[in-house]
Image 1 (cartoon, rainbow, N blue to C red):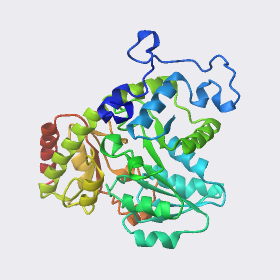
Image 2 (image 1 turned 90 degrees about the horizontal axis):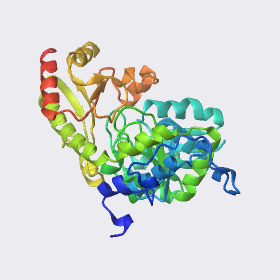
Image 3 (image 1 turned 90 degrees about the vertical axis):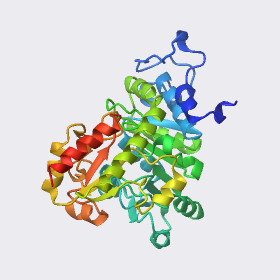
Image 4 (image 1 turned 45 degrees about the vertical axis):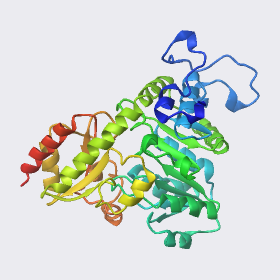
Length: 387
């Protein structure tokens, strides 16, 4: 069996590992060295230097990540936002225009609306479900289209097949943030996307102890992004590389358990009279459920929901739960619960939140690895306190 034909579970463990093993070490050592002996490199970007993203820890991660999504190359960065901002700055210049999905992570929304215009880069937001409207927003300077595989925090699933076809027809870069699904549930490059971006802080690492990002895709584009990253300095340090490398190896077992647990919790919440609505693509009631079934191998560990009542009801529910931690971020072994308007989307104005459908009382849950029955029991008692 060739390496490229191996199952993703095997790639998680063995892809990108040093061959031969370094001094026989089964786990790759941490190369805590800022610089390496000069070896005759002719290009600045090939010099062995920590900021140039090419220590042995970086190289191993790049090869592993590329293998997971069947990409030609990959690069890691100091955060998910570093991956997003560097990608857009590498591919777009002053005077360029791009299209972005209208409901995105708050930090991405802020980058697009508040930072990129200062570089002369303009954008328009598109509804991911309405291909007929996309063409009307095209300009001669449009260069890219940017979406999320499952949106944060409303769990929408855009017409991803249509996005790729649209990008190919109009010669646009197709870029997707694949954080919520992870390579276990969805591999965008297999569906024609040019670039797949991850906040590795979340599922890829899975233990809430580092901040990191990654971009996976065509070698030519990754080289361009890497060179921009080298200049901007958003490098991931070797120790964080080591922790990410270690965390990735358990990705499959973690995500599959979170898929199953989130489905049970979503079904439980949907059955309760105190709950107004549940946003989870695994539910048959989800507007894009059929699309999610066709695209994804699993529906993920993220869901959001709204209770009957006002913000105080939502706050009381969160306070009365005992298992999930009220904190930002997601994708770790512990369940995390939050109101997005106070964390992930706090940078959006109330008007902007209302425009994209994020209510003040919306609750977002990142399902961890606790016993599903315990989480449901905890939610059951918390719901009873708001009756």
